[in-house]
Length: 113
Length: 113
Image 1 (cartoon, chains in turn brown, cyan):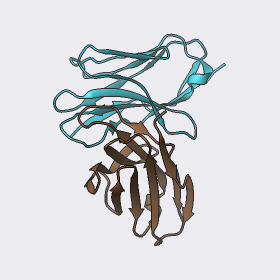
Image 2 (image 1 turned 90 degrees about the vertical axis):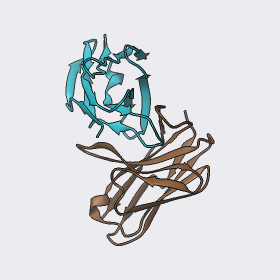
Image 3 (image 1 turned 180 degrees about the vertical axis):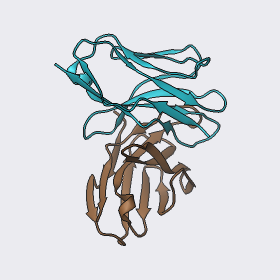
């Protein structure tokens, strides 16, 4: 299995509070991704990174920001959490761009009350 | 834009039955195609992939053939087991950059003994 960990694995927070989710990899892969999984939607891309300090927006980026200061860590921040951001968040990594597969972490279940 | 359509289910079968989960796609160019599996409470695992037309991906008794003429990548297994119960996602990656996978909404498969 690819060495990907996510923390925390579960979090309950209140509307309006900031939240940061962490993805850590031990594979030294260049590309990292954040997705959210919601019933009836499959997985949707939030943000991705193609190198240290290099990030870009995905399909559902509103209300989220990311940072990548080291190859191994990719942080997802909800500046002011809303109930619509209640979801399961998955991090993924890939050694190359283009058409390669991605490897997924175990997920973080976030509940915003 | 790119899209993936798959039957959502739940699909309920008896053990040893034949399985087909349909997947069709819309994409520019020549995408890579993937099937991922998600067991309860876990992240997504790559099940199989195909990178060009007429390629057949296979793993753990599952197979899928990349059909460019029908833009399809149907998942099949000859004899399912209770342990195959999971959610299955069809996905594509169109390439040309570092962006993410495009997923179908997932098919919940239930195998009864």
